[in-house]
Image (tube, rainbow, N blue to C red; front, side):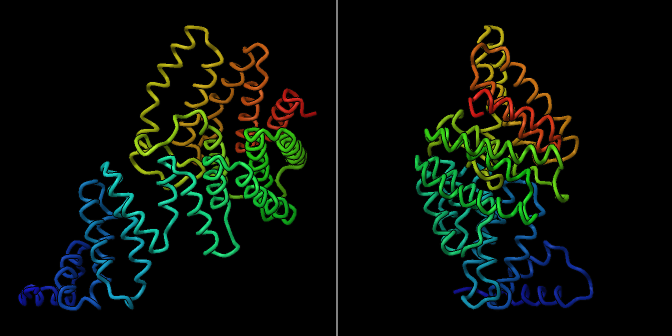
Length: 390
């Protein structure tokens, strides 16, 4: 039985009815008291107030306390409370993020499972992918697609295809990605999709099919990409688009997954195929590898082991893109050295057409992102020739 502190209740009501403007902390304190007296009215307000404090906080330990409180309050809301599902999702999302931020991964996964039951399965799919449980993640993606109707975004399709591919289901992944390509093909004709985005998708699909051992489909996709890029080099985009760098960076980073350590529950890795929603511990681990990679690059350079050096430098470049690839300010100036150096190094590798074609393709797609289409076309044309696609 809850003992009501009537003086506290009175003080809380006076605060809310007063002419002053209470701080967010004062509001949360008042709602904590009143939610025990009138939960139907004040429990939703308590969730909102505590989440507002959470969003203002910059301390991980404080974040965790607030997010846990918001989740408890959200669970206690009555079934017919206004916007109950939305409040519960926001509270649980804050709670899982706070748990991952302080390294409590197992508990964070449990909260993600609760979040999925509330209709927000995307975060759980990312967590499962981080742990190498790609088939389970793909099943969640499929369930989400079924429940969400026919309209699926670039991000939904890329993540699903990435998880299917991670599970070794290459044909299923390609079938999903082909649907995206078909939508983009129609979208470019109707000027609803950027030609640049369509080019990136085609090149990524070519990599998918090469990996699956389907060289003919990979060749066809590269040829089509070269044709689209020729149009860009000749006439440019038919219309202006806002910043689309995230489309490029997501696919470029995904292309590097095979070079990274395999993900597992004991060694989680990023959920490649999605730009958002990386767990804090995974983000820190991925970028924490950078000093060792840079030291390895130095050793390989001094030993003259150029093929391995090219691979390590690409992993370094991918981390740079993860960190800053979506920011347009000085985009070309910041990233040109990474891609130019990769091509220069690859040209020093005797008879290694595959690595040179990869470096040229990477630079071509970067130059598309930088809206420098003629050099991008030249690079991709050379890559295609090296791979005997002419």
